[in-house]
Length: 467
Image (cartoon, rainbow, N blue to C red; front, top):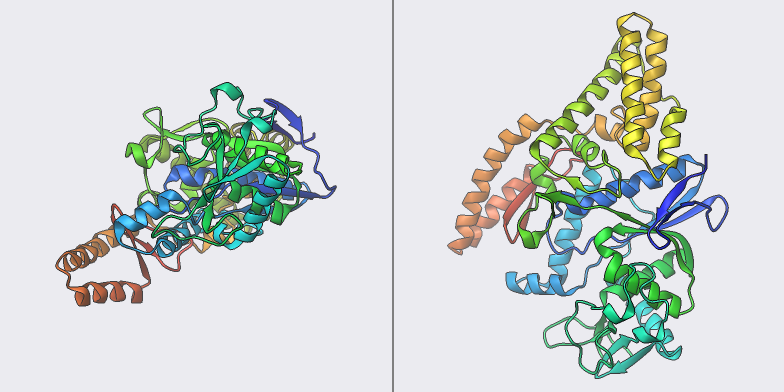
């Protein structure tokens, strides 16, 4: 069966045919590194890691790019409020996101470009748009002329007359539907030289420039959260195609993690940070939970749903371990035809999980009957299917993770007391004591991250448990 993917632009399932035979090129909009990652942030990383693994399993050489937005209004605002340099703020949370992805077993991207590392490409793309009559400069800013691109709105379904960019009215904008490509420098903000004066790139421009630099003028798949369809991805399409690029051939968008029916969002105060969730379940269990729903559906969070997913994974894991113990080994096998059909149908993980549970059931029956060879065969199938989902319990990543929720909870109490001492010292401006506590924790292998909501800790060398 051919892999079929739901393309947001055509609103239809389409057979996936790579641009270059034997290769697949994928761009995923990564994090704006402004705060500690919550489980809503990392869902896209988990969802499209499964896509990447399935493409690779199909024999394709996958180039997978995930960017880092390390210059953006929210980063500047939060860093200024905290009295910290913007670049330090961005670097702090970039490390936090890297740690979260690593803990969850997300494969590292082929490249992970930072926006600030590609200013030259952004300036060049902006100039091309001006030269082709799709952008104009005004008072040091550069805007994209939306009316000059008749296909605008094709991805999101927005009519041109109804477009509202959600950005403040810019100086010298000809039309309020136009969006910013280049922002003129403001006092106290970082800036880079350009033909229009010092400034910095707009958010939408960043991804278009980096995608073209790493994947070429046309590539296979562009991924991201459904909240990015408009205006971010709509604007990416407009500026890239107006510049003469074919850009992405398929558009995939994942659903949100919700609480009480609302998107998990810092502004709503309903977020659960990855470190805090990993104090209650193992990283492999959190990944299993995040990947258990279809990637396009909403995932409604509750403590019970997370606990049930963890229990479900433990039953699967327990079967594999029992086979390994009684049969001497549980070698990797081949997934079932039903599993392959489910994944080929727009990454249908719920149906794929049904195949896994069936194989576990049959394997347990064989194990109970003492038919070890049959049990081992089913365990091999289960491992192969779990590997595509990134949660094979015998994978070295999970075997060495050393996750232990009870131990982490106890450690959290001890570390929390130290962090409270450090916080009190900082309030009293007793920097020597505050630094001594931090150094003592670092010497014990514990990293401390200062967030607007207070300090958070994680095990520096762990790819599993963190808090």
